[in-house]
Length: 484
Image (tube, rainbow, N blue to C red; front, side):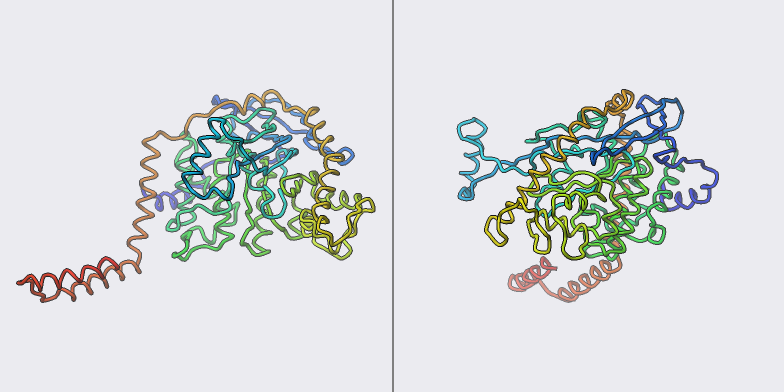
């Protein structure tokens, strides 16, 4: 199978093949598969309202039948999510003592010590929305993202539901996760990366040409046409830019139309223009009916206003949850007001760290500025206000709003694997062969191998090994050979 030749053929026949792109939310129809070869379709009349600053999800759908595959909307709710890790005393650096400590804890012979990472996180997000998880480094953003994506279960408490159903293996194929570090093969081109992913992950009932057209659609949607034939690149291989690499990673996940897309620091290492472009692409992906959650450290003012919802975390505690554009109004109501013009994200991060040098403070916060406990008291004050003003309303919203029964049953249907074990082995072998061949037959490597061969040939040229001393001299040359 020649992937490059097939791609060219698929482009010529693209006008003949009819492939439906994912429908959008709002007034457009959203189709969802029920997992049995039949599809369900429903019309969303309204799915979000806001009452007294409390975001609620109200779902009204008309159930229709259709023969078209599409997205299954996911309404994600999480309540009182806590996570802790077992801490090992700093004095226990001896591996034997550490092992004995683990055995003792498993036998309940020693009291276990845990360090809390997340403490009572509550919120919700629906289709067509982007939820930003913000907070300083080490606040628990990535940990929460892994929990919401079903990648972390041990020592997790609280409830996380998808259409009011707890996580189950059937959801794994409906969730896309883009890690902070792009895990791509450096010797493959952008198009080849997505083509191999399509053959591995798309349903077997799709024809080969439909898979190529799907890849072409993703490349155009993510603005990767210019670099589609360029290698990904890596530490020692020149390739595409950081923004293009991140968009390729996103394309790898949205290729299979995930209902829930999670991204860990997608704008890290990107310039402002590339970051804005990436976020606008995520907006378009969300409007197609997907639920998107992303961690972000310090977005620009323009980027901040692109988010629908914001969850602000400080030292593992939530200090704000709600509409992103209403966050400044909320903190102003608490009398935290910036005294100079500031980027909203910068202002919020200053609050989460207790660094409020250019921010006016509420009168009931009596800790004097500059004291040792000042920053901690700021954070405790914000946590208390969240517990009183936001958390009760959000929990009440969770109890009132329920996902329709057909959505609850759809997320529990486990799909079969798209490819057989043998087909996967064949495709992975072909991908590895193509990637390794380019690495081994690279021009620089060929020149290097040729140069080493000539050098070693000269070392032994016209050498004699008639005596033991001469043989010993020749063996000495094996040391530089090992180094090379």
